[in-house]
Length: 227
Image: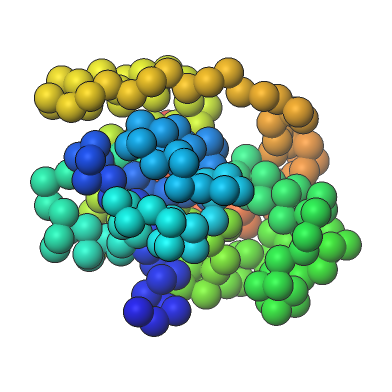
């Protein structure tokens, strides 16, 4: 399978659960993958956490990383879900974890011309200049990740801002469909505050407008009340 195809394998299919998860980085992705691995009995397959794609490919033969097209073709009956996040909050979170406070600076970010000392405003301008098919997955628009041919793929979309409540709603929906309900999410270990976008945009209306334009489709599909 080519590298470009793998860049678009946004869905993890777990046949044992009858579920597919549309994974969106910077939206509690690692925690949700951990919870699903445990629900599917795969937790002992992972040595160093659940976040690495290569581990899901090589250590979890009972799970499948697929594109939206492959999901529709090969797994039409699974129940697909995803979680999304307010776009500017997600962008600020990406900057903090991948640039400003990165423990190991990403090679792909370096290849894009970004540096650990890149100011936030320059980062936003950089993101705004890049189309989604050239974008790093951590700042790629959620609409691009979760749609196919203009249609939203997941049947259930929860929000990061209501994570525990929406996870409970998801579990109830799965049970209503005849599946096994999910275990509640564990309490979040809050080692540092959740990113507040306003702390990064600092009232810069032009920068806010640029970010909102960049993620206009995310707002339209997932946060229409904020448009």
